[in-house]
Length: 463
Image: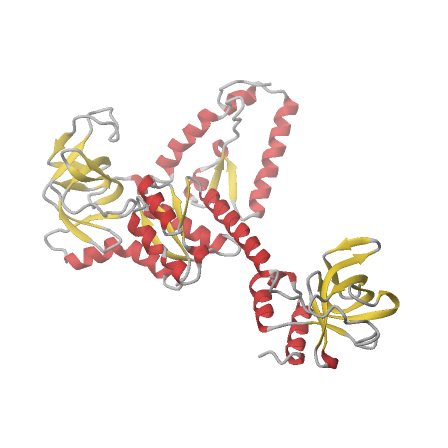
């Protein structure tokens, strides 16, 4: 029985005994499944004091998003968690805890920084240390502004000036040289007994750790995010959760500028044009910047969801690799050794049509064939492969197929005169064809195929 928008316990009282038994059974199954994952849990109104004090214990709230039953319980649970489990974390203290939310220019005020003061005090005249990609900056707070009561900071209106603010509060900070301050980074105030260099190191610690993670990637894309936290999440996703990982060579926070585009365009000069790419997460890109990116052959992918960024870049890489494979197909030669079946010779002269068995490797349309035992006699190029009356692109080891061989350079070559069934035919490999296989077709060759490549390198004296 549906009890729209009622607390879950009131809704349960209206149910039949059978429904309540079903609810008990399903809730027990849910707790067992969570326990199998190492998570202790219980329905929130059945939790005792010991359960609440155990930080690993997870309260469960039966909720229906369709009928609204249990939504009030979710709100109640949030209040209970704050009072019973998080009270130490949310208790106010005098030590300053302040985070940058946004950096923007305001008419008449210049560049300002919106910050959230969680704990402590912020005063006009304080010497504050901010974090930028170019290093820490020390700036005097020239003004502290808040919007009128019941108005958002983002809504344009007359601001209220303060000499001092106390957390928790959102406040707009006015100061000099704040253009490059990064959203999501901490703000610290230099006290009379503090060492400025120690405060600077503390403010930069999060960014320094992040940059240390990037030191190994000399080639890779550029990642731009709206805040330090968003940048951290995106980097972790790209480097640890994507298969294969996407290398990152440069990072940035905030709006993408022309200098960022110029910085990553160097990947084109390094021969890694696929990495001349900026993955922009929740940041604006101006029309001027996009036009500059097109001029220097840099791609900018933007999205408000991390997975969408990954999908865009993955599609681009798939299309690029497919194009490269198509371009390399004329160069790449798959390794194969084939034996002519003398009872299946259909045409002895150009085009030569014979039945063959693939002894080793992969025979592919477009493969040049030769006879190493006859001073490397060039027999021709395989133009078609047919098996059981059907044409196909490849034939693997053990397959018996009919092939057509065309030799435009020497159309007079004839089966039975220059070569016969006693001569095995080999794919004619070169250093260029092997390199093309490694770059673009590595996943299409199995271990035994690569062993055949090594064998043919010796046959053709390829270094």
